[in-house]
Image 1 (cartoon, rainbow, N blue to C red):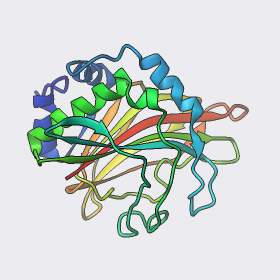
Image 2: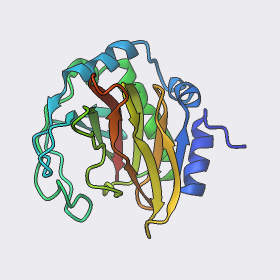
Image 3: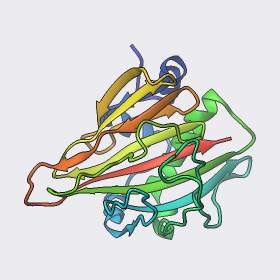
Length: 238
C-alpha cells in the first residue's frame, strides 16, 4: 500500500496514476517533514483579506484571490517580482488570453513558515519526478463564495489543464458549503477519480501533462448564511 505521508510514496502515486488525492491526516505530516506549520492559524486567516477577481468573463463576483510567483533553482527558493498571471485560451477558454493582475500575496504570508514549508515540500516531490535546472512556481490564494442565489464555481472554465507541469490543490478551510467535488479525467475526458476536499490539509496532486481536473460548484448548507471554500493552489512549470 502506498504511503501518502512521504514524498517517496506520493511521487510513486503520481508516477503511476498521474494524480493523487491525499487526506489531511496524511498530508500534514508529509508537509511537516520539510519545515514548520506553526503559523498556520495566521496563514489560514489571511484568506479573509483577498481581493475580488475582476477578470471573470462569466460576470461572476464569487471569487477572491491573491497571487505570487517564485523561482526554485540552484540558489534555493525565492520570490520573484510581482507579475501578471497568464494562461492561453487553449488552457482557459473562459478567462485566458489576457494578462491578469491580482493583488500580491502579503509579504509576511509569502515569507512565512507555512508557505515556505509547502513550497519546499512541492519542490522535493516534483524534483523526484522531473528535476529541471529551475522551476517557475505560481501560488494562488482562492476563496470561492456561495450564497443561496449564487453558486460558487471553483473552476468556471470546467474540466481543464493549467498549462503547467504539476499542481497542488490544498484545502485551507471551508465554511457552510456543500459539494465542491474535485474530479480528475484523462486527456480524452474519461473520468479517473473524484474526491471532496473537506478538512484542512486535504489535497489533490496532479500531473498536468497527463490528466485534466475540475471542481463542481459549491452551495451554502444554510441558505440564510454565506459560505466559502478556501484553497491554496501551487503550480510548478519547467
